[in-house]
Image 1 (tube, one colour):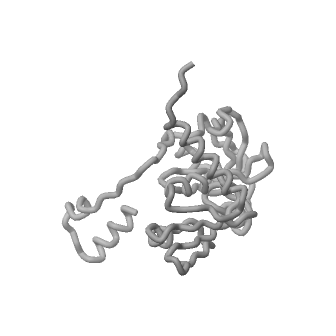
Image 2: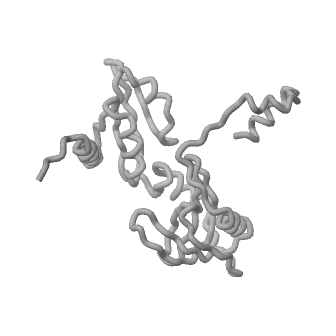
Image 3: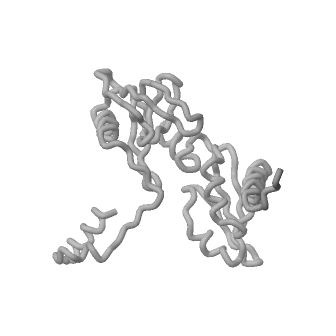
Amino acid sequence: MQEHLKKILATQQLNDPDAIKRIRILTMLSRQPALQHFQSAASAVLQRKQLDIVYHGRGRDRQTERIVSPQRLTHYRDNWYLDAWCHKREALRSFAVERIAACQMLDHAARNITDNELNGHFASSYGIFAGQARHTAVLRFTAERARWGADEQWHPRQQGQFLLDGSYELRIPYANETELVMDILKHGAAVEVIAPEALRQTILQNLQQAQENYLPKQKE
């Protein structure tokens, strides 16, 4: 983004070195990867070499070692991910670069995956939790929140429409609901999940569990 701003300033012949200071870019919730691991991942991507990584996954809180064939580095929501072919799982996977505990570039050529296959896996579904979209979330924003819902880009193939009562209905294809749930919850009472029922129940369970945090604790 900063590079784009510099080009705009250059195009408009604004040579004032203080001009760029009048534009602020605030990052939020970013996670910083170790510089040496980021450099190794980037080098492996560009040189088309396999990478031996020790990865600590958040979900299972478990550390594993695996050989991967890096395909792309993806910057998503202020964080870096390594899209790679995992030789252990024999499948495409995304690895959060900041969760790489150790890595070493190997002298073996990386397996090449076609752009069509990469795009189909990583870009055809919701966010970084990629895969072939199997579900469509139907969200309904209240009339008061409709303009915000209409302006947000959740997915390249989303579909939305304003309803007669002023509310806004948004349809989002997805495969894994994890990240989608987090984004729905941030809107609180301003949005309702209409379908599918499984996603609706997940949101309901999250709200009920959150409510329990605010209820008085019974003394034993």
